Image 1 (tube, rainbow, N blue to C red):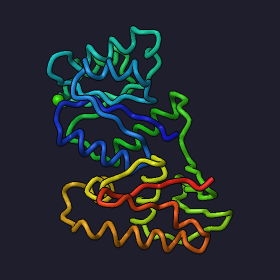
Image 2: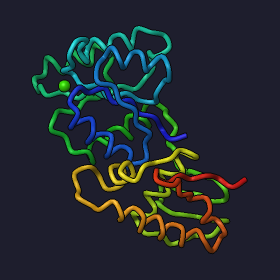
Image 3: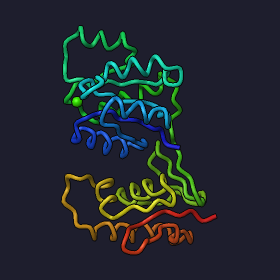
Length: 228
Ligand code: CA
């Protein structure tokens, strides 16, 4: 299973940016718009790490952090705080509440990811390095595709498509969902582009008799179905 990060942020644009960058970096991401909804989600499914925005409507990020630290189930969760304020007293206060690290907005997604990885290592969260099914292996650390023990050449877009589909076996992705997740919502790309890259992906898998794992769900989209 991929490392699971919960984003708690009320601003949709920042949530979207975080989700996009983190998913692309190989994390599994869930979102909450408020501290209250984050707490509910936390007890349903414990993530590996939480990113909390300081300024939230209702329960503040700091209060959420305190609640997380107080409960036995969640007390050890690595916490990264996003803050729009830079003054030291506030930052120190956040460390008192058990924040492991913080970043001020605006932040670069690249730096955030580096800091998250460092925080995971410090907290002993295992890094997810391999996705595997039906003899297909995606080595996330080296960005390699290995099929039946052989290194296989694959384009960067096909790689990301395969990675996304394999992370969610049997889940159907609509083409516009794939557009959002692979290319990002801000780029303008025709929906047919998805079909072109799916075709290329099947071509990569065909020599191994695995092109059938990428299935077309008529008038809906595509899914990865493992062959047993
Ligand atoms: Ca906010």
